[in-house]
Length: 234
Image (tube, rainbow, N blue to C red; front, side, top):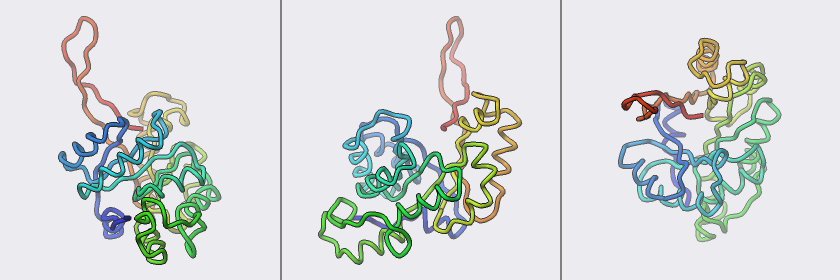
C-alpha cells in the first residue's frame, strides 16, 4: 500500500535530504542504506540491466523502514513510468526531459486525474492489490508520488525556465556526467564549465535541485598503494 512520502512533504518545507543509487539487485543493499541513515534511494533502472522483478523486490524491502524508494526509469516512456509507480515506488526519476512538452508528459503519466492521465488500476501492489479503496488510493497516490526530471543536456539548460513552469514537478535532478558531454568536456565533472552550469541550475527559483555529491572510494593502481579518489554518481 502506498505510504506517506516524507521527502515530498519535507521539500515543500525547505528541508534537504541525502540518498544514493541502488545498482545491485540484492535487497540487502536497501536494508544497508536504511541502517546507514540515507533518506531515500534510487533504483537505477537506466544504467543497469535490472529486470522488473528485481526492481519490485528492492522497492518492497523499503517497506521495512522509513527510507523512501524511487526509481530511475530507462526512458521518458509513459509505460515505464506506469510500471515503476504501480510496483509501489514513491517517485520516478525520468531521464531525457529537455523540453517543457516532455516534462508535461511525464507529469501527466505519473498522476491520476484531475492532475494527469496515468493509466488507472488499483489492483497492483501500490494499491494494496485491490484491498484499498480505489478512490482513496488515487488521491493518496497523487499526494505522495514524487516527480523528478533531469537537467543533463544543453537543450534542457536552455529550456529550464519553461520547464519550471510545469506544475507538479518536485525536483530538477542534475546529471553531471551527461553535462560533461553536453558541454564538451566529457568525463570531467569537476571542470569549471560544469561546476558553473550546476551552480546556475541549482540557483534557479521554483523547484528544489538534486545535485550529485562526490563520494570517496578505495582505488588501487599498478605499482601504487591505496589512494583515495573521487567518484560522482550520474
